[in-house]
Every structure is written in C-alpha cells, then in structure tokens.
Length: 188
Image (cartoon, rainbow, N blue to C red; front, side, top):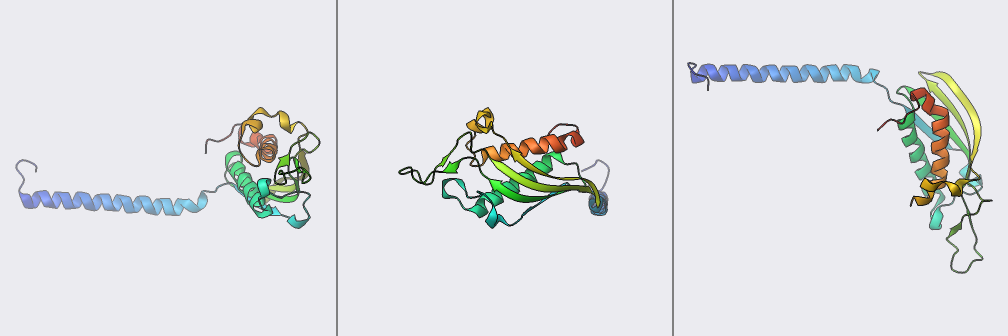
C-alpha cells in the first residue's frame, strides 16, 4: 500500500487502473477486429479433374488413391503458404498423375512394392491460374517430370511416400512463384 493514503483511496486507485486496463484491452480487440478483414493470406485451391482416369495415382504400399490425392493437396497448400505473397490465390487443376516407379505384380512377395526405374519417372500434368484480388496475373498448363529423379540426394534420403512427386512440385513452385517473393522461402 502507498504511504500516506488510506485503504479506501488505495482501492479507488486500484479499481480505476483495472478499468483503464480493461478499456485498453477492449480498444485493442476492437482495432484487431476492424483490421482483420483487410489482412489477407495466400490461398491455394486444388481440384483433381477426373481422378478415375489418372495414369497412376494409387498409393505406395497399397495406399488408396484418395490418400495420395489428399497428401498432394496438402503439400501444394503448404507450398502456397511458403511462396505466395498475401492476397494471391493459386487455382490448380490436376489433370493427370503418374507416380514414380511402378508395381510389378509378377515379383513373388512384392505385389505392394513400387519398383523405381529411370524409365518410370513421376509425372504430374496440371493447369493453373494465379490471381490477386480477382485480377489474373498468370496462367498455364504444364507437365512436370524429372527423368533424373533417382539422382536427387535429398529425395533418396527421405522416408516420405511421395518424395519424388513432392520434389517435382517444390521445384515447380520455386521456379514459378519464388521470384515474386524475393526468391526466398518464407519461414512459416
């Protein structure tokens, strides 16, 4: 308690300090609520066009096609968060997927094992539209592939099921969208 002030006066000062803090907190929350709509984030929308007709979108180790598509969708959205500036939207239509390697069911005991050969690189065909506030910045259709996919040391060391496909998508994002954000990946 402060010297020379009675208990009642001290309590009055304390209550007015608490009231001021509550008002400051309320004002801060109100300001954040008003400013929030003006803050925009980058968005990646992924659509798989007729996935039943894809060359090979089955999962590794007997995984389902839906699990493969969900994994690739999530990875594309993660890349968008890293490379696209706030306010931009990237619409991606995946037209075909051919995963790296192939199943060779005639191999005894290895029917769920994907055999990787240099003639079975990953391929992803897609169409995309990059826009900002409703204005189209860029669009195109590309077939991503890497015949030297087995020589990628970071992909070979990865335990990820779709490491080669993700390497294709990372390279594509870096080539097409990193220059717009200064060429660097964002830390988040």
